[in-house]
Image 1 (cartoon, rainbow, N blue to C red):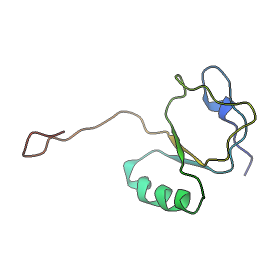
Image 2 (cartoon, rainbow, N blue to C red; image 1 turned 30 degrees about the vertical axis):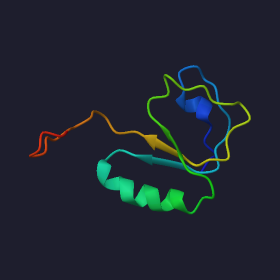
Image 3 (cartoon, rainbow, N blue to C red; image 1 turned 90 degrees about the horizontal axis):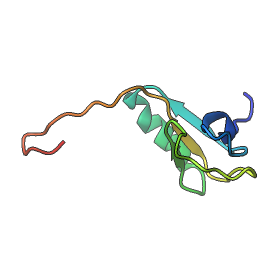
Image 4 (cartoon, rainbow, N blue to C red; image 1 turned 90 degrees about the vertical axis):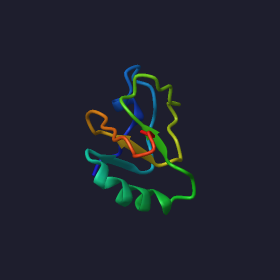
Length: 82
């Protein structure tokens, strides 16, 4: 598995290597990703589409969780909360 660079996932093409790259396409993947990220000493950085991300070219020591799912679904609870 090759090393991931944030620059490959940001629209400005900024950002260096990351120590751990976790990606998901379905919300059912979240528990497994959270467990994998929890073994790291630093809390994970969550990356969406990368259009509002300025990342350092030297990289980061934080694991990255890339939200690769498409679309957002909501459900309304009985008390009106989303």
